[in-house]
Image (cartoon, rainbow, N blue to C red):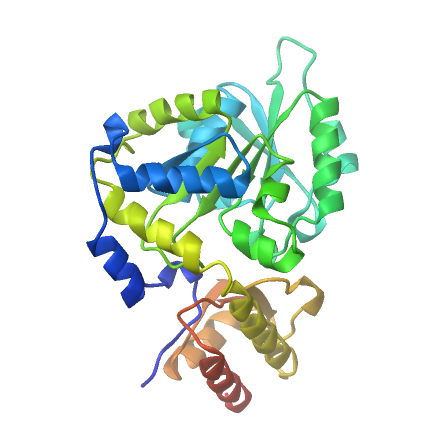
Length: 339
């Protein structure tokens, strides 16, 4: 039976050309900043995001943790969306390791507005945790792969400046946002003090994320990376895949978005599912079922080779990626209609 991988874009595997880049990678000791492939990847990331410097780290969770450690600070509060990946799926690292307290803020499509953040900022009394940082997620995973638009970014930047706050962007799927909004990665990143992006999701590399910011910040980040056990040696083998991904795989993300839209429209036409099509902006779609039905429907789909995740009792998440073609999405849609 053929399997259709729609659980996550983290399941992407390196194509033959990427594997050749890995094989041919020039390497050195990255802890000594002597791995030429890592250095090239970092320079390329800085150029793309418009930041002064960049750091290659093993994962997006570590990149976010480093940002919270430096920009949040121990004993302080960080505003982030109530569905933020950092709150729900990074094992409490913000509190346990970075020592800061995430404060959840409601917001439509994963976007936090000034009016809802304003009453949550704390900065006066000595006996309270002060607010130091805003973390935004772009695209926002559990809001359905939604993007921060330019006006939203301008508003959050203005709010941060008015309250002397820093902004970190969890840009795990930054290039999906680039593809969907038409803004460049540098333009999106210009509204933030710090930005991460993953190489291992839609871009198709086997591992790794980038953390980008000014030179002083990245110098501190390198120390924290080492403290967390993220100092890698001949990491150029993996960095070469990241270079290939940035140079070759950004342009093809639109195909994933088109496949997701087709899948979303099919799901919304079925009697057992509903989809908010206005929130289908990139490569993630949530289908809603009757309460308590998601797990059993997901099992029935798995029996026909469709791999998705029941994320709640009435909710199933599908994610498109380079692991599934337009032709295969057509096949998935036919199976769903027949389910």
